[in-house]
Image (cartoon, rainbow, N blue to C red; front, side, top):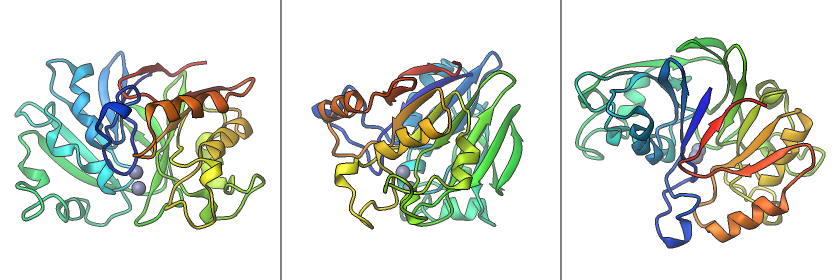
Length: 277
Ligand SMILES: [Zn+2]
Ligand SMILES: [Zn+2]
């Protein structure tokens, strides 16, 4: 598997010269293999960059949402590879009885000119429960993770030879302090992460910013690294950067959190990652 990291910014886009190197688009990761690009995780504004890997081809596959906060859905109507007659997508949201209805709540007049069925590609809508699934030929484990405001899943995606976990929004401190005081290494997150080649994890805050209850539903970069160490992960990609975190500040985070025996990287918009050890 190859991952195209199309958007890395949390909460709201961050335009401007201080955010150019790591990127200001909100979460989106496209998964490719020799069968093409058929699985996209989240549709933040980064999804506007996915045509860079699709080229002139339409998107035909699945868009899997971790949850429906603005920063994970707002790119959807601007995804040009889906807004064309020869495209199709199954849009899968966690634990909502009416998946189209819940998307329509934010994507329809007067909030937006069209609703999700009015894109030119043919879309279907589905809800996902926790557990093991087969999606676009990948094994996908979905587990509920604590986050503020609506059901939120983390995903573990595997093929025959490699695996990665995508936990974009996660507040482990909501469950307990954990051994480092930054949140619990709880069973659901361990199930998602144990032994994966690559972990993409919420790193919106830093431990120095941590005061109990002030994380707005998110994790610290130090928790993400601690989790990766505990779960024997090959590489951790710090993700969902705070919208105020500048390029220079992210450089500093990356160099401060290096660990021996673990590759720690700060996720950069536009990078392509080979999922293997
Ligand atoms: Zn988010
Ligand atoms: Zn969120």
